[in-house]
View (cartoon, protein in one colour):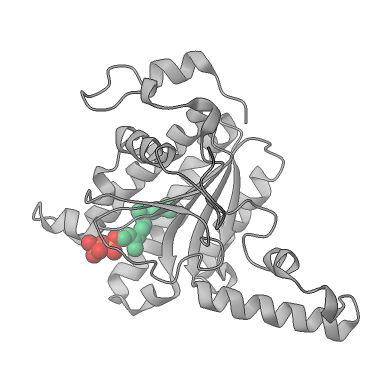
Length: 261
Ligand code: FPP
């Protein structure tokens, strides 16, 4: 992925004491970074604010994560925005989130054009409220020819449902005679997932200290490095992003093999 060195340096000017762009090897960046954005509610509660204010603040962090990824030259950024289990939240909060997804997307479209970002969704977006779905569809159409970073938002997403859906689609193709049972291996299976055609995440970041996958990308995270920070999502900044990449680059990745010398 192309990056503008000048823009990159000025974006990371004035670093805090413990981390800077110089800590990062720009030739060994993860090609796909994924975020479980957690802690919006607790961030708000700690400030005596409503949970909605936490989600609104969370949008700012997500925008910063998009910009940081573009500046660094990350190929794919993905983020877990709403799970199939999140429908259990109070109706008021669900309505707020659906409204926020739609309004934010419309507002951020110019940023996506400007930065050549292509939008994608993981999850059953057709079952979302009509207005939200329509905006998502518009976002997909209007960014389809962008050739820079892919930004994928997981909305109404659950990994087990995704895997069951892939099995269903494969069964349909076998029945229709367009796919041979013998040809179904892990490479073919992966093409039927929402993430089909994208590289698996190399780095997964989860905020607010929880050590769970919460039904997120169970298949795709097989060899992914995890970085968990205690920070709540609205506090997540470009500097914490650098700390996550620095930790990633300090890991010895073996993919089930032996340590490279
Ligand atoms: C987790 O915090 C956050 C969510 C379930 C929603 C994530 C949504 C955003 C960050 C807004 C994104 C907006 C767009 C447009 C994509 P939580 O509510 O689970 O916090 P808690 O664990 O402290 O209760």
